[in-house]
Length: 519
Image (tube, rainbow, N blue to C red; front, side, top):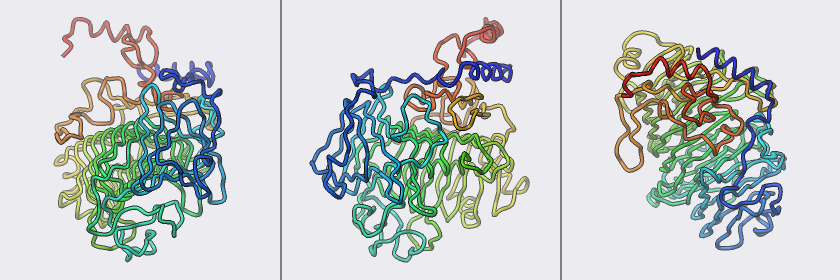
């Protein structure tokens, strides 16, 4: 029944054309004018000649259209407020001079959007009508927040990370050495783990990751030693040339993260990151040809310290409730790429369409076997090699028993979520095969609930979305605007199979269930 529905939906989308799902008024519900009528303001006019915001408090209002025409810095002691519904666009400068917004140590950003009025960072080439293709990546830099919490950067790491000469203080990836505005962390013993860099809530960061040099791009949202006094909630990164979200050390917690159509990992932690993350949705693809439209790498890439051997604390991050959908096979992408002596906890997640579900490097395998790195109650759907240890596909023995029976992970070919996805042509946003990452009601159950600690929500199910419920990505993300997700467009009670329309299929579902108890 489901496959027939998807074919019907695909045909309808092709005939309807690209504009069918693209209506998304930006900020209208909070009194903001149409984006096309807003007054352009170059952000360089709010800064000195070196990109530093000059006022102690700068407020970006949604009646203006802000042009991020250079690197702009929120310096120590400065505050940047961004009103709900505000749009910031950046040009593709090139030459290693990517425009970016950098919140330096002791600076604060207060970007507190809402579901109906998100704050959007995007390219100047994006008309914000949903037609700027998701394959447009690397068109500007990104958003970088730097704090004073712990990391394991040491001077002995030279050659693998950028060091400053002070243990515990690094130079953030993607920015030039020699500028203290690019420093993150603090000297050992003076870290501030509850450091507060502000709020990012209902923020969408699109089409960034401009290349600065070989293997040197800016992540969509870079968090360097950011403390757990900072709020990161409902943040989307789409079409970034590097990672969607990267955590370089720090203790910051994050909830409701969306990473889509990026060309690298979706969550990447490193350098002793020890925060908590819950509710993450990542969608790769669809192209897997290796050309310019190729997308994606790993769902999670978890490191303690790239190629370094110092004795600083390991990464010990905790993730509950994530859903990652990979590209069509064959690929070498991993659902979880665990390497560089990482530790940590991954629970109640769904990984679909990856080469490996869990890929353990030799320096992490002892931590996994000993319980310092755990992956429990996750579902691996359509993965070619579900458990890969030290480069070897593992399908039997004590390690496989631990992975499945002991740790409660499930291996299935298909069926828990709809993980097939297509756009045609690839350089458009015409989605011809929508995913549905929301499991059916009553499925994706888990015996493990997140801890009750003031941050985690008690979601006793697998994946980013409550089974059978409307997902939290609806209304504010680019995913919902272009209609890449069946569940996000199914908003009416009669749409029982959540395919975006009420029809005889829904009636059949109702008729078959008539008279049965709701529990």
